[in-house]
Image 1: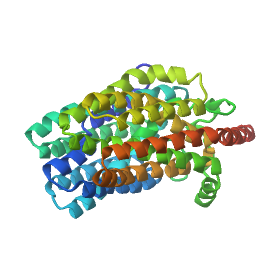
Image 2: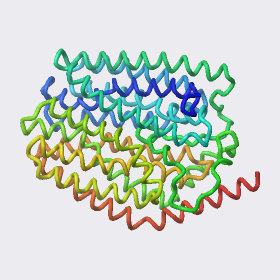
Image 3: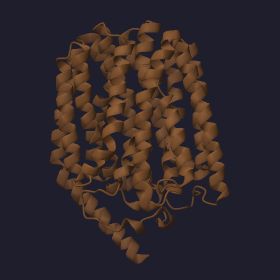
Image 4: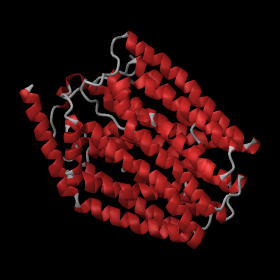
Amino acid sequence: MLFGLPLLYWGLWLAILILWMGRFVTSFLSIYLVSALHIDEGVVGAVVAMYGFGSIIGCLFGGTLSDRFGRQSMIVIGEIGAAAALLVVSLLVDPVALGAALFVYGAFASLPSPAIAAYIADVVPVERQQRAYVLQSWAINFGYAIGPIVANQLVKVSYSLMFYVEAAVMIAVTALLVAFFREVRHLGIAVPGPTAGGVASASSPVASTSASTSDQTDGPTVDRASDSTSAAPAPGSLRDNWRRVLTDWPFLAFSVLMFGYYLVYFQSTSGLPIAMTDLGMGLGDYSILLTINGFMLCALQIPAMRLFSRMGNSRVIVAGLAVTVIGYAVQTVAGSWAGFALAVVLWTLGELGTFPIATTIVASMAPAAARGTYQGVYNVLWSLSIALAPLIGGAVISRFGGRTLWIACTVALIVVTAGMRATKASRERAVARVMRESIAQNDAR
């Protein structure tokens, strides 16, 4: 045990840190297509969007397949497949072929995410999972902050080198993870089979971040120690779970609102680099902004979680969205690197209260037997936003310019913030209902 967490977890933590330090191609993809391949900005949006559409497939099936065939197989297939697809992308210049290859890359790259998130719940005791997910989130953000610095040096030599290094990192991380999964099986605590109880897990690196605050809900509290993975109720039928999700209007309303937020947020890796390039700024200017974002999240995340634990989730997410509105409002008038830097600082502060809290709310609204289905639906919308954001951002910038895009983003965020505030009561009632059901199930057990 190290800091109260098993060594198996720390092996995974190290792998996640290395993986995200080398996961930089998607952040620089728009610039690569415009600057190196000289593809039209409007077409670039469509090409980059194919990565997001592919990730929908990975998020949709990754968790289900890992429950049936094991976490290790999904990680190995996903990382090796993503590395191979990335090498193919580096060789292509035709936009149609690039789009097809990025679709495959997105599907494989997102396949391991649910398995990794579930693995943490497999090996970490329930009472220590909050700490485990906070540290996982820190590793992701630290890696995301370092990655652009590494990528900026690589592209000075060759854009192709950026693809080769990320592919090599994926293969190395896969080898590390395979070694630790073998040890899990040796200890007899392997992942559950298809008939085992479900595990509450996030289905993306971003989503898994929010598990760190899973004990903070908007409704009444219950003793979550009894709601462990070892005593999880038998999952209901797929039909019953889907019926529950598709008739849960507070959850659907929340998911749609977050979908609007994510469409805006992912302009940071699609619309923003193109807009900065149009203003005469280079790759180095953009990479510094990404580094600022990552280091701020690393420095403030744990202190912020302590503050958020004393606030209701709805209050936190509305406050986070409001700060993000201010950030994008500043971006509408930014014409220099300093202006964009100020905007990034502001919407990074807002990000502290949106990404982690959103998935916490989803977890608190989901009944135990349908957790995977709820997280799957939510993460499909997250992936869909990754796909659509480049399409929207590229088209708007190509026709109307970057400032029009930031004005539209600001208006959209105002609508999302107002909607989140207006639906607060319905979410709290939904959380209270799930809590009552959980208490009843524990009493029956």
